Length: 47
Image (tube, rainbow, N blue to C red; front, side):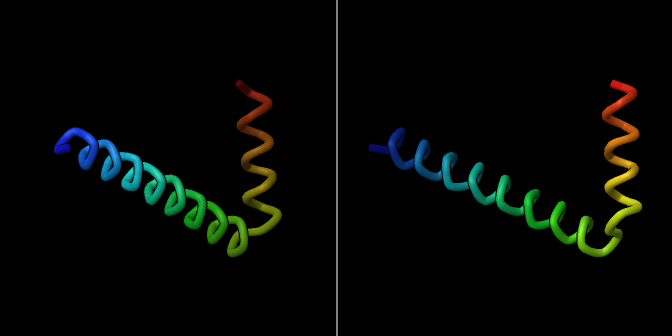
């Protein structure tokens, strides 16, 4: 039972982390707009 609780907690923590990262990225994209988009595309072309 303890293992199941741990796995559920781990899955929940992972989902919250992914959600938080998405929210931060959305906030940055909204605040910086086109300049941030150019920065991302420039970095992707170098990879």
